[in-house]
Image 1 (spheres, rainbow, N blue to C red):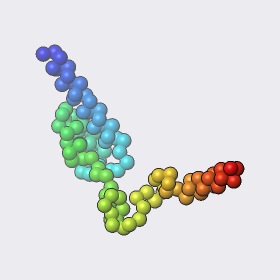
Image 2 (tube, rainbow, N blue to C red):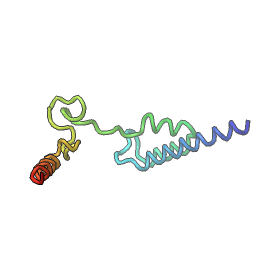
Image 3 (cartoon, one colour):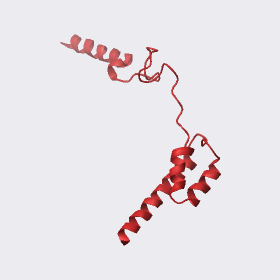
Image 4 (tube, rainbow, N blue to C red):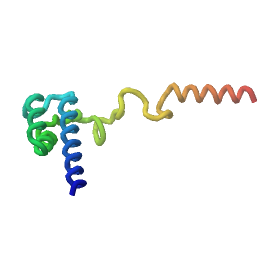
Length: 107
């Protein structure tokens, strides 16, 4: 019986710590109330506070713009910051070509 209570206490503690860390560490503002109110709710309502935070208060991640990401119909690259694979990198391909030409000259 003691083990069950210890397990429930640790599960509750983990839920409270996770909810507080998520509430205080998020970049976006919570959906319904301010962060201070959510901290009070999480701390004062033992299990329900954490559940309410994850169900109602947590900020939704920003939606991707239409035409970007998976399944987008824009036809552009998925990662506009640079090549994904080495064979998509023009500098890499240029270097390979130069090395092959140099190797052929030596033979």
